[in-house]
Amino acid sequence: MDLEEAFDRVPREVIRWAMRKLGVEEWLVSAVMSMYTGAKTVARTVYGNSNGFEVKVGMHQGSELSPLLFAIVMEALFRGFRVDLPWELLYTDNLVVIE
Image 1 (cartoon, rainbow, N blue to C red):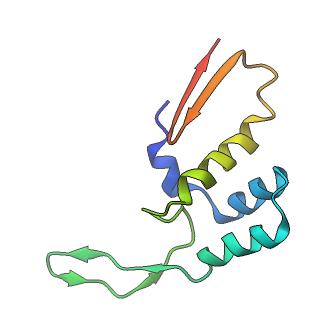
Image 2 (cartoon, one colour; image 1 turned 120 degrees about the horizontal axis):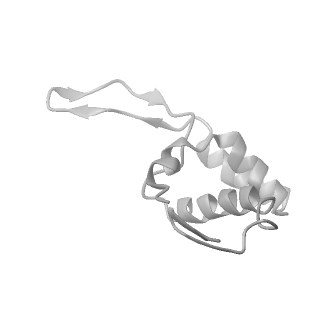
Image 3 (cartoon, rainbow, N blue to C red; image 1 turned 90 degrees about the vertical axis):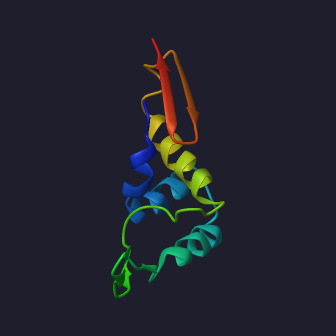
């Protein structure tokens, strides 16, 4: 299963929930979430850049921390299913489930 597009669609509150579920200390949860507070971007076109607008969902593109945060979210989600799955492998934005 290719989860490439999922990277851009993870709600920020799910990131917070997943870190807390896996026992990340609250000061670190707050530090990570502060990176996302007020995050803005622009759309570039051949006609120029748009006005800046706030991005409220997804992980920062190109951030060294984003793959780790995505793995944390996937781990928190799949812990509940792991009992029924014989084997799984999560690597970056790909998931393999073997029955």
